[in-house]
Image 1 (spheres, rainbow, N blue to C red):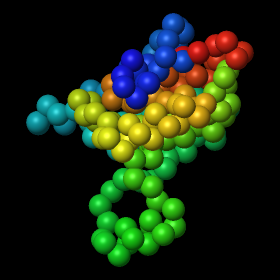
Image 2: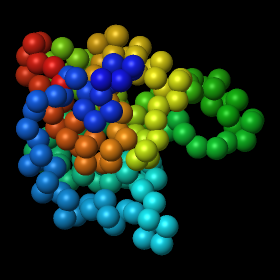
Image 3: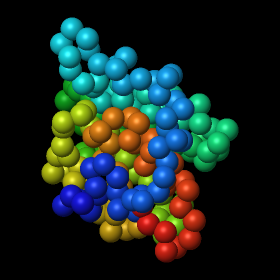
Length: 167
């Protein structure tokens, strides 16, 4: 478990749940190897991983209908100073996680995911958000191992039953 209270591979609230099969079936559609830059042999960028995750979610709606509520929080990107200032006035907050699944499970109010390019780590402002959200009853996951691991974490979260269940 990291300092944020979130395991970089699986958050504590998702540990010990068998979901490999749930994601395995989609690998033929969304292979990480297809996302890798062949010329430079670099890992996919965060946006590519996130697109793959949302494609998986769309394909998984039949089995997990609550995925329809999962959404992206558009907090990233370069902006002009004036546009950035306007977005801050509208409520933009630095460090807010990328993805929210506002569906309660077990003892959690919802799931927040911060996607990262493989090998990247959380910034301090992102750690603070993840810590605060976890402290306030949300399950938090850092998706820095690729979309497949993020999908596994989501499946484990959605399969939580009672208050005693943790990830």
